[in-house]
Image (cartoon, rainbow, N blue to C red):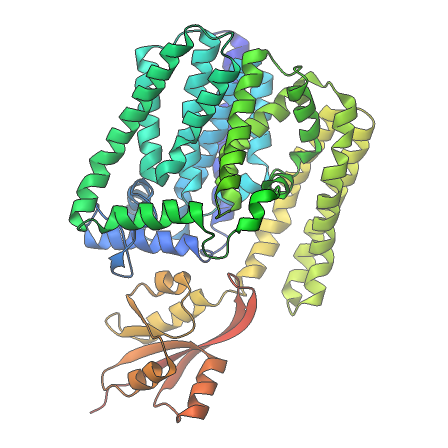
Length: 544
């Protein structure tokens, strides 16, 4: 290894460590966000408390939403540090930094170390990766596994030969990815098949590649089955029935939880996701696509790799009835690679300048929303930090556009990096803490835990946010009707009811004043639904 390569590797490691540090700092500024984060977090806590590491549960019931790997990983920091936001989000930051480091090695193999460093920074500073790396969800753990498969495939393509250990490593990574998110782990297989077909004239013995990919897939399925079959037996066949029937086939065939719809099959749903989620680097992305499609970005195998990585994933996820932004997160390293290669080459100035037509509206809209939005809402504590964030975003955007129009894409890229770092200052120390004051579940749960013994039962009606379940730390009984609330209030043993104030008022108008005493009240915003709400915690005392 040359001295320049060693220096680049040291820089890459420092960038990766900086990503972990920054993302963990952001992670500690907020409590968990409804709804996925507290669901996963509570399932991890129940796993640690019960000692059942075979099948995840949520609120004491089977939780078959995702396979087991994510819960296994999070159980380690939870056992060490307790169920804190830092422990639960630790692997998100580590996974994001690992993905960036793997992207560095792919870019280094395709072009050079300079492109690799650019790719790292580009990937880490996009809005989508920022969101993924600071919350406790599976995608930040899944993505480095998928990217590691693509790294090995890149080494094989550029080296000209697939060795036995390449197949084994890809199979292990695929198996772990399946244990993280099931069939979503097959995206690299589709990408490799597409790349192989595009490169069929330059790849040696393409038929052998198919056998090798079949072995990779078989090894991955074997690793997944080593856990899935015992877990399915332990639940009498319920786990795989729910997981594949509802969360795999169900999401593919019909929109679930109001995400997507059949009419979106014919619309470019993921185009605005890429434009907004890959911000601010959408400024350079049109130039990257132009160079890629006109065969000026790397050699033929490089172009085949990037096209095979990006296009099939978008097509497949567009065909699924349920659509969510993170479903195409797999293509983010490829977008960063194409953008980094374009910045280093600094060609196609016309399409690089054209990027302002995508970048400009998003930057202007985001800046105006930050500066003006809080003034139209009852959130005075958000005014100053949002104004500061909006001014920084506007200043960064104007300066970057000026450089881009002057055919200076590299200085424009440096402005974007500096601007995003500065943007994080008011975000981390102002905006996020201010938004935290709007959350309802953490203060309500804190009051319940302070004023009632741990063994006191808790029930809810019309407020079933998973964050409440996590922060209360107890099994919660959901009530399903007004009559059930009245019957619950008349029971003789102690208990706590958590209910919106307006709902309680309606019940007491129809029936009678319930024999309950208020112990906590919180006005805020139900962030998962976007509606203002006042929630009460009421205690039911034992009758003598």
